[in-house]
Length: 244
Image (cartoon, rainbow, N blue to C red):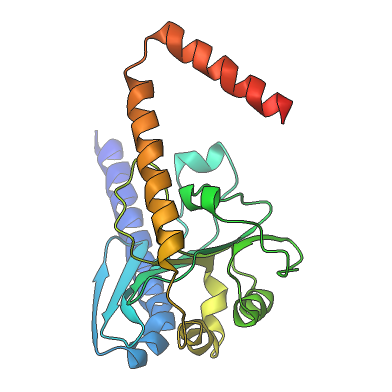
């Protein structure tokens, strides 16, 4: 009985020490987002857990808001046994003050699933080794990706998934490895991408809106199909793809 109690106490003490160490690590890593504060009027922060920190920023000439999210690797997680251990990373996500043409850049080994890709053509000018690029990329976007080698970067007013509501506001999203924030020029170069942005044409917005409505109606119709009708529809779709 006494032996069991000693074991339990040791486990609790070890868990406490590990969590304290992780908290201190996260506090140090959170400082990597500090350079972004000087570009915004208001800021607030929150520690979601001992592994995740969020910095919320607002009051910028080009961005309505921007959130920086740092995620540390867990000391141990059962899911690590089923696949590769994730690296420490950060995400920057926010919304622009104006709606601008969509663009998507992502590493070839990390394929992006985004509804907006349906309405965006491949960018032939963006010759970035190891990446796929779609939409209206300018020279500044291409140079930024080449310099920083982020995992995913997109600007889109289309929902990521067809079932998400469409608000037609341009969302900014970037994901990369945490060491990238150690570069003193990163915050400046990232925000410089939005210094001068052009509004999207009303024709392109209308095309997206009409296409979205058609796809939503088709989705609802499919949900109301019987199992037999769904199988028949799936076979027809596969036949169309083969003919193409």
